[in-house]
Length: 414
Image (cartoon, rainbow, N blue to C red; front, side):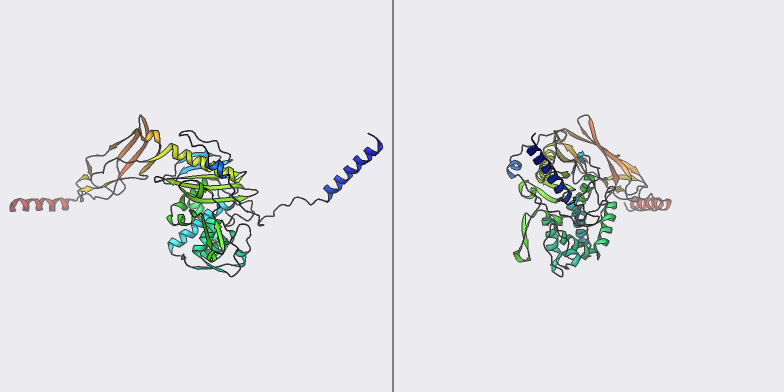
Protein backbone atom coordinates (compact mmCIF):
# COMPACT_ATOMS: atom_id res chain seq x y z
CA UNK A 1 0.00 0.00 0.00
CA UNK A 2 1.55 3.36 -1.09
CA UNK A 3 1.55 6.43 1.14
CA UNK A 4 -1.38 8.10 -0.69
CA UNK A 5 -3.60 5.03 -0.40
CA UNK A 6 -2.70 4.62 3.27
CA UNK A 7 -3.57 8.24 4.00
CA UNK A 8 -6.97 7.83 2.31
CA UNK A 9 -7.64 4.68 4.36
CA UNK A 10 -6.76 6.43 7.62
CA UNK A 11 -8.93 9.42 6.70
CA UNK A 12 -11.88 7.10 6.00
CA UNK A 13 -11.46 5.43 9.40
CA UNK A 14 -11.36 8.80 11.16
CA UNK A 15 -14.50 9.94 9.33
CA UNK A 16 -16.37 6.77 10.28
CA UNK A 17 -15.34 7.15 13.92
CA UNK A 18 -16.52 10.77 13.90
CA UNK A 19 -19.94 9.78 12.48
CA UNK A 20 -20.40 7.06 15.12
CA UNK A 21 -19.39 9.42 17.91
CA UNK A 22 -21.90 12.05 16.80
CA UNK A 23 -24.77 9.62 16.17
CA UNK A 24 -27.53 9.79 18.78
CA UNK A 25 -27.89 6.84 21.15
CA UNK A 26 -30.79 4.46 20.40
CA UNK A 27 -33.97 5.82 21.95
CA UNK A 28 -35.43 3.65 24.70
CA UNK A 29 -39.00 4.24 25.82
CA UNK A 30 -39.35 5.19 29.44
CA UNK A 31 -41.81 3.39 31.68
CA UNK A 32 -45.27 4.84 31.09
CA UNK A 33 -44.35 6.48 27.79
CA UNK A 34 -46.67 6.16 24.81
CA UNK A 35 -45.34 4.20 21.89
CA UNK A 36 -46.38 3.68 18.31
CA UNK A 37 -48.88 0.90 17.80
CA UNK A 38 -49.74 1.65 14.18
CA UNK A 39 -50.99 -1.65 12.84
CA UNK A 40 -51.16 -1.64 9.07
CA UNK A 41 -52.56 -5.19 9.20
CA UNK A 42 -51.13 -5.78 5.75
CA UNK A 43 -52.01 -9.12 4.21
CA UNK A 44 -50.74 -10.97 1.18
CA UNK A 45 -54.25 -11.59 -0.09
CA UNK A 46 -53.30 -13.92 -2.93
CA UNK A 47 -51.29 -16.18 -0.64
CA UNK A 48 -54.07 -16.20 1.90
CA UNK A 49 -56.84 -16.95 -0.56
CA UNK A 50 -54.80 -19.67 -2.28
CA UNK A 51 -53.64 -21.30 0.97
CA UNK A 52 -53.85 -25.07 1.09
CA UNK A 53 -56.79 -26.58 2.92
CA UNK A 54 -56.13 -28.07 6.33
CA UNK A 55 -55.67 -31.82 6.56
CA UNK A 56 -57.85 -33.40 9.23
CA UNK A 57 -55.80 -34.59 12.17
CA UNK A 58 -52.59 -32.88 11.08
CA UNK A 59 -51.78 -29.91 13.32
CA UNK A 60 -50.27 -26.99 11.39
CA UNK A 61 -46.70 -25.80 11.79
CA UNK A 62 -47.19 -22.13 12.68
CA UNK A 63 -44.73 -19.25 12.94
CA UNK A 64 -46.20 -17.74 16.12
CA UNK A 65 -43.92 -18.25 19.14
CA UNK A 66 -46.94 -18.41 21.45
CA UNK A 67 -50.39 -19.68 20.47
CA UNK A 68 -53.49 -21.57 21.56
CA UNK A 69 -56.59 -22.94 19.84
CA UNK A 70 -59.83 -23.62 21.75
CA UNK A 71 -63.47 -24.41 21.10
CA UNK A 72 -65.59 -21.62 22.52
CA UNK A 73 -68.59 -23.39 24.08
CA UNK A 74 -66.67 -26.10 25.94
CA UNK A 75 -63.38 -24.26 26.35
CA UNK A 76 -61.60 -27.43 25.22
CA UNK A 77 -57.97 -26.83 24.22
CA UNK A 78 -57.12 -28.31 20.82
CA UNK A 79 -53.62 -26.95 20.24
CA UNK A 80 -51.11 -24.96 22.25
CA UNK A 81 -47.57 -23.67 21.85
CA UNK A 82 -45.92 -21.92 24.81
CA UNK A 83 -49.44 -20.87 25.77
CA UNK A 84 -48.40 -19.80 29.28
CA UNK A 85 -45.35 -17.78 28.29
CA UNK A 86 -45.80 -14.14 29.46
CA UNK A 87 -45.92 -11.66 26.58
CA UNK A 88 -46.93 -8.12 25.74
CA UNK A 89 -50.46 -8.13 24.34
CA UNK A 90 -50.36 -4.70 22.62
CA UNK A 91 -53.91 -3.80 21.50
CA UNK A 92 -55.20 -7.29 22.24
CA UNK A 93 -55.53 -5.68 25.69
CA UNK A 94 -58.70 -4.06 24.36
CA UNK A 95 -60.54 -7.40 24.50
CA UNK A 96 -60.84 -6.89 28.25
CA UNK A 97 -61.76 -3.24 27.72
CA UNK A 98 -64.57 -4.28 25.37
CA UNK A 99 -65.71 -6.99 27.78
CA UNK A 100 -66.10 -4.57 30.68
CA UNK A 101 -67.93 -2.03 28.53
CA UNK A 102 -70.34 -4.68 27.20
CA UNK A 103 -70.97 -5.97 30.73
CA UNK A 104 -71.63 -2.40 31.91
CA UNK A 105 -74.13 -2.01 29.08
CA UNK A 106 -75.93 -5.23 29.96
CA UNK A 107 -76.01 -4.28 33.65
CA UNK A 108 -77.58 -0.92 32.74
CA UNK A 109 -74.69 1.04 34.25
CA UNK A 110 -74.18 2.83 30.93
CA UNK A 111 -76.35 3.17 27.83
CA UNK A 112 -75.53 2.51 24.20
CA UNK A 113 -76.74 6.01 23.27
CA UNK A 114 -74.93 7.76 26.13
CA UNK A 115 -72.80 10.64 24.95
CA UNK A 116 -69.17 10.18 25.94
CA UNK A 117 -67.11 13.35 26.31
CA UNK A 118 -63.48 12.96 25.28
CA UNK A 119 -61.12 14.13 28.02
CA UNK A 120 -57.75 15.72 27.34
CA UNK A 121 -56.18 12.43 28.45
CA UNK A 122 -58.19 10.39 25.95
CA UNK A 123 -57.59 12.86 23.13
CA UNK A 124 -53.83 12.80 23.74
CA UNK A 125 -53.36 9.05 23.40
CA UNK A 126 -51.94 8.90 19.87
CA UNK A 127 -51.12 5.70 18.02
CA UNK A 128 -54.09 4.14 16.25
CA UNK A 129 -57.03 6.45 16.88
CA UNK A 130 -60.21 8.07 15.61
CA UNK A 131 -58.73 11.51 16.37
CA UNK A 132 -60.99 12.57 19.20
CA UNK A 133 -60.76 16.24 20.12
CA UNK A 134 -60.88 17.27 23.76
CA UNK A 135 -64.50 17.96 24.65
CA UNK A 136 -65.85 16.14 21.58
CA UNK A 137 -68.97 14.07 22.29
CA UNK A 138 -69.64 10.70 20.68
CA UNK A 139 -72.06 7.90 21.58
CA UNK A 140 -70.98 4.72 23.29
CA UNK A 141 -72.11 2.90 20.14
CA UNK A 142 -69.71 4.86 17.93
CA UNK A 143 -66.90 4.60 20.47
CA UNK A 144 -67.37 0.81 20.49
CA UNK A 145 -67.05 0.82 16.71
CA UNK A 146 -63.86 2.81 17.00
CA UNK A 147 -62.33 0.26 19.38
CA UNK A 148 -63.65 -2.97 17.86
CA UNK A 149 -63.08 -2.06 14.22
CA UNK A 150 -60.24 0.46 14.20
CA UNK A 151 -58.50 -0.43 17.50
CA UNK A 152 -58.67 3.24 18.52
CA UNK A 153 -56.68 4.06 21.66
CA UNK A 154 -58.46 7.35 22.24
CA UNK A 155 -61.89 5.71 22.08
CA UNK A 156 -60.77 2.93 24.46
CA UNK A 157 -59.66 5.45 27.08
CA UNK A 158 -62.79 7.58 26.64
CA UNK A 159 -65.00 4.50 27.18
CA UNK A 160 -62.97 3.48 30.21
CA UNK A 161 -63.36 6.92 31.77
CA UNK A 162 -67.09 6.94 30.99
CA UNK A 163 -67.63 3.51 32.56
CA UNK A 164 -65.44 3.89 35.66
CA UNK A 165 -64.71 7.59 36.12
CA UNK A 166 -61.01 7.29 35.30
CA UNK A 167 -58.70 5.00 33.37
CA UNK A 168 -56.97 3.94 36.61
CA UNK A 169 -60.28 2.87 38.15
CA UNK A 170 -61.18 1.01 34.98
CA UNK A 171 -57.82 -0.80 34.90
CA UNK A 172 -58.44 -1.94 38.46
CA UNK A 173 -61.69 -3.47 37.26
CA UNK A 174 -59.83 -5.10 34.36
CA UNK A 175 -57.47 -6.85 36.76
CA UNK A 176 -60.33 -7.89 39.02
CA UNK A 177 -62.22 -9.38 36.08
CA UNK A 178 -59.10 -11.16 34.89
CA UNK A 179 -58.80 -12.82 38.30
CA UNK A 180 -62.45 -13.91 38.13
CA UNK A 181 -61.80 -15.53 34.74
CA UNK A 182 -58.81 -17.45 36.07
CA UNK A 183 -56.30 -15.40 34.08
CA UNK A 184 -53.53 -16.05 36.59
CA UNK A 185 -50.69 -14.84 34.36
CA UNK A 186 -52.21 -11.50 33.36
CA UNK A 187 -51.74 -8.01 34.72
CA UNK A 188 -52.96 -4.81 33.07
CA UNK A 189 -51.58 -1.32 33.64
CA UNK A 190 -53.66 0.49 31.00
CA UNK A 191 -56.77 -0.15 28.92
CA UNK A 192 -55.26 0.23 25.44
CA UNK A 193 -51.95 -1.64 25.35
CA UNK A 194 -50.30 1.52 24.05
CA UNK A 195 -48.44 2.62 27.17
CA UNK A 196 -45.09 0.94 27.76
CA UNK A 197 -44.96 -1.01 31.00
CA UNK A 198 -42.84 -3.97 32.02
CA UNK A 199 -45.73 -5.19 34.17
CA UNK A 200 -48.36 -5.17 31.41
CA UNK A 201 -48.34 -8.85 30.46
CA UNK A 202 -50.61 -11.74 29.53
CA UNK A 203 -50.44 -15.17 27.88
CA UNK A 204 -52.07 -16.85 24.92
CA UNK A 205 -54.14 -18.99 27.29
CA UNK A 206 -55.38 -15.96 29.21
CA UNK A 207 -56.21 -14.09 26.00
CA UNK A 208 -58.29 -17.08 24.91
CA UNK A 209 -60.13 -16.99 28.25
CA UNK A 210 -61.13 -13.32 27.94
CA UNK A 211 -61.92 -13.78 24.24
CA UNK A 212 -64.24 -16.66 25.07
CA UNK A 213 -65.99 -14.56 27.70
CA UNK A 214 -66.38 -11.58 25.37
CA UNK A 215 -67.86 -13.73 22.61
CA UNK A 216 -70.45 -15.08 25.03
CA UNK A 217 -72.03 -11.61 24.76
CA UNK A 218 -73.72 -11.71 21.35
CA UNK A 219 -73.90 -7.92 21.05
CA UNK A 220 -70.14 -7.63 20.50
CA UNK A 221 -70.45 -9.44 17.16
CA UNK A 222 -72.39 -6.46 15.83
CA UNK A 223 -69.07 -4.62 15.99
CA UNK A 224 -66.32 -7.21 15.58
CA UNK A 225 -67.81 -8.53 12.30
CA UNK A 226 -67.86 -5.08 10.65
CA UNK A 227 -65.49 -4.84 7.68
CA UNK A 228 -65.90 -1.16 6.86
CA UNK A 229 -67.93 1.63 8.44
CA UNK A 230 -67.63 5.30 9.27
CA UNK A 231 -68.08 7.85 12.05
CA UNK A 232 -68.98 11.54 12.20
CA UNK A 233 -71.53 11.26 9.42
CA UNK A 234 -69.09 9.62 7.02
CA UNK A 235 -66.16 11.96 7.68
CA UNK A 236 -64.08 9.31 9.47
CA UNK A 237 -63.64 5.98 7.68
CA UNK A 238 -63.13 2.73 9.55
CA UNK A 239 -61.56 -0.45 8.14
CA UNK A 240 -61.25 -3.49 10.36
CA UNK A 241 -57.66 -4.23 11.33
CA UNK A 242 -58.65 -7.92 11.45
CA UNK A 243 -58.38 -8.85 7.77
CA UNK A 244 -59.90 -12.27 8.44
CA UNK A 245 -63.28 -10.53 8.64
CA UNK A 246 -63.12 -10.16 4.89
CA UNK A 247 -60.95 -13.06 3.83
CA UNK A 248 -61.91 -15.99 6.07
CA UNK A 249 -65.36 -17.56 5.97
CA UNK A 250 -67.27 -17.40 9.25
CA UNK A 251 -65.00 -14.92 11.06
CA UNK A 252 -66.69 -13.44 14.12
CA UNK A 253 -63.78 -11.35 15.45
CA UNK A 254 -61.88 -10.48 17.41
CA UNK A 255 -58.81 -8.25 17.92
CA UNK A 256 -55.42 -7.44 16.46
CA UNK A 257 -52.45 -5.89 18.23
CA UNK A 258 -49.00 -4.60 17.37
CA UNK A 259 -46.07 -2.75 18.85
CA UNK A 260 -42.42 -3.13 17.95
CA UNK A 261 -41.71 -4.94 21.22
CA UNK A 262 -44.86 -7.10 21.31
CA UNK A 263 -44.76 -8.08 17.66
CA UNK A 264 -47.90 -8.88 15.71
CA UNK A 265 -50.67 -10.36 17.87
CA UNK A 266 -54.14 -11.64 17.12
CA UNK A 267 -57.14 -13.23 18.75
CA UNK A 268 -59.22 -14.64 15.89
CA UNK A 269 -62.60 -16.35 16.11
CA UNK A 270 -64.69 -18.05 13.45
CA UNK A 271 -67.96 -19.98 13.48
CA UNK A 272 -69.32 -22.54 11.03
CA UNK A 273 -72.32 -24.86 11.44
CA UNK A 274 -72.82 -23.78 15.03
CA UNK A 275 -69.24 -24.51 16.16
CA UNK A 276 -66.94 -21.61 17.02
CA UNK A 277 -63.18 -21.75 17.53
CA UNK A 278 -60.77 -19.16 18.93
CA UNK A 279 -57.14 -19.00 17.79
CA UNK A 280 -54.71 -16.74 19.65
CA UNK A 281 -51.28 -15.97 18.20
CA UNK A 282 -48.77 -13.71 19.95
CA UNK A 283 -45.39 -12.30 18.95
CA UNK A 284 -45.31 -12.91 15.18
CA UNK A 285 -42.74 -11.07 13.09
CA UNK A 286 -45.17 -9.89 10.42
CA UNK A 287 -48.83 -9.14 10.06
CA UNK A 288 -49.18 -11.78 7.37
CA UNK A 289 -47.62 -14.41 9.68
CA UNK A 290 -50.20 -13.89 12.40
CA UNK A 291 -53.12 -14.07 9.97
CA UNK A 292 -51.75 -17.17 8.29
CA UNK A 293 -51.07 -18.85 11.64
CA UNK A 294 -54.59 -18.11 12.86
CA UNK A 295 -56.13 -19.23 9.57
CA UNK A 296 -54.18 -22.48 9.68
CA UNK A 297 -55.27 -23.18 13.27
CA UNK A 298 -58.93 -22.39 12.62
CA UNK A 299 -58.99 -24.47 9.43
CA UNK A 300 -57.37 -27.38 11.26
CA UNK A 301 -60.10 -27.19 13.91
CA UNK A 302 -62.94 -27.09 11.38
CA UNK A 303 -61.46 -30.00 9.42
CA UNK A 304 -60.76 -32.18 12.45
CA UNK A 305 -63.32 -31.56 15.20
CA UNK A 306 -67.04 -31.26 15.83
CA UNK A 307 -69.46 -31.09 18.76
CA UNK A 308 -71.74 -33.93 19.90
CA UNK A 309 -74.27 -34.16 22.74
CA UNK A 310 -72.82 -35.60 25.94
CA UNK A 311 -76.19 -36.90 27.15
CA UNK A 312 -78.36 -39.72 25.85
CA UNK A 313 -79.96 -39.35 22.45
CA UNK A 314 -83.44 -39.63 23.97
CA UNK A 315 -85.42 -37.62 26.52
CA UNK A 316 -84.82 -38.56 30.15
CA UNK A 317 -87.98 -39.95 31.74
CA UNK A 318 -89.04 -38.96 35.28
CA UNK A 319 -87.79 -41.27 38.04
CA UNK A 320 -90.18 -42.65 40.69
CA UNK A 321 -89.31 -41.75 44.30
CA UNK A 322 -90.28 -44.26 47.00
CA UNK A 323 -91.56 -42.68 50.24
CA UNK A 324 -91.22 -39.25 48.67
CA UNK A 325 -93.59 -36.33 49.03
CA UNK A 326 -93.03 -35.75 45.33
CA UNK A 327 -93.66 -39.11 43.66
CA UNK A 328 -91.38 -38.35 40.70
CA UNK A 329 -88.34 -36.18 40.03
CA UNK A 330 -87.01 -35.08 36.63
CA UNK A 331 -83.38 -36.05 35.98
CA UNK A 332 -81.07 -33.63 34.16
CA UNK A 333 -77.63 -33.72 32.54
CA UNK A 334 -75.01 -32.07 34.78
CA UNK A 335 -72.43 -29.60 33.46
CA UNK A 336 -71.50 -29.55 29.80
CA UNK A 337 -74.21 -30.99 27.58
CA UNK A 338 -71.82 -31.14 24.61
CA UNK A 339 -68.43 -32.68 23.90
CA UNK A 340 -65.70 -31.74 21.46
CA UNK A 341 -64.63 -34.85 19.52
CA UNK A 342 -62.80 -35.57 16.30
CA UNK A 343 -64.98 -36.08 13.25
CA UNK A 344 -63.73 -39.66 13.06
CA UNK A 345 -64.88 -40.29 16.64
CA UNK A 346 -68.26 -38.66 15.98
CA UNK A 347 -69.07 -41.39 13.44
CA UNK A 348 -68.69 -44.10 16.10
CA UNK A 349 -70.33 -42.56 19.17
CA UNK A 350 -72.35 -44.62 21.64
CA UNK A 351 -74.08 -43.30 24.77
CA UNK A 352 -74.94 -45.69 27.57
CA UNK A 353 -77.14 -44.29 30.36
CA UNK A 354 -77.24 -45.86 33.82
CA UNK A 355 -80.36 -44.57 35.56
CA UNK A 356 -82.22 -46.36 38.40
CA UNK A 357 -85.88 -47.16 37.92
CA UNK A 358 -86.62 -45.87 41.41
CA UNK A 359 -85.04 -43.67 44.09
CA UNK A 360 -85.73 -43.55 47.81
CA UNK A 361 -86.53 -40.24 49.49
CA UNK A 362 -85.13 -37.88 50.50
CA UNK A 363 -83.76 -36.65 47.18
CA UNK A 364 -82.19 -33.20 46.86
CA UNK A 365 -81.71 -30.99 43.82
CA UNK A 366 -78.27 -31.73 42.38
CA UNK A 367 -77.98 -35.23 43.83
CA UNK A 368 -76.20 -37.54 41.40
CA UNK A 369 -78.72 -40.17 40.32
CA UNK A 370 -77.01 -41.71 37.31
CA UNK A 371 -74.37 -41.41 34.62
CA UNK A 372 -74.13 -41.43 30.85
CA UNK A 373 -70.97 -43.01 29.45
CA UNK A 374 -69.98 -41.68 26.03
CA UNK A 375 -67.68 -43.88 23.98
CA UNK A 376 -66.11 -43.87 20.54
CA UNK A 377 -65.46 -47.51 19.81
CA UNK A 378 -63.67 -48.89 22.89
CA UNK A 379 -62.45 -45.48 24.07
CA UNK A 380 -64.37 -43.69 26.81
CA UNK A 381 -64.72 -40.01 25.93
CA UNK A 382 -66.71 -38.86 28.93
CA UNK A 383 -68.81 -39.94 31.86
CA UNK A 384 -71.51 -37.32 32.29
CA UNK A 385 -73.40 -37.18 35.57
CA UNK A 386 -77.19 -37.22 35.69
CA UNK A 387 -78.56 -35.22 38.60
CA UNK A 388 -81.92 -34.64 40.26
CA UNK A 389 -83.61 -31.59 38.82
CA UNK A 390 -85.85 -31.18 41.86
CA UNK A 391 -86.19 -32.32 45.45
CA UNK A 392 -88.48 -34.84 47.08
CA UNK A 393 -88.65 -34.86 50.89
CA UNK A 394 -89.26 -38.10 52.74
CA UNK A 395 -92.76 -38.78 53.97
CA UNK A 396 -93.15 -38.54 57.75
CA UNK A 397 -95.34 -40.83 59.88
CA UNK A 398 -98.08 -38.23 59.80
CA UNK A 399 -97.90 -38.06 56.02
CA UNK A 400 -98.10 -41.84 55.78
CA UNK A 401 -101.09 -41.94 58.19
CA UNK A 402 -102.95 -39.32 56.14
CA UNK A 403 -102.26 -41.28 52.97
CA UNK A 404 -103.60 -44.45 54.56
CA UNK A 405 -106.72 -42.61 55.66
CA UNK A 406 -107.28 -41.20 52.18
CA UNK A 407 -106.87 -44.70 50.75
CA UNK A 408 -109.43 -46.14 53.23
CA UNK A 409 -111.97 -43.42 52.44
CA UNK A 410 -111.43 -44.06 48.75
CA UNK A 411 -112.16 -47.78 49.31
CA UNK A 412 -115.32 -47.00 51.32
CA UNK A 413 -116.62 -44.70 48.62
CA UNK A 414 -115.97 -47.41 46.09
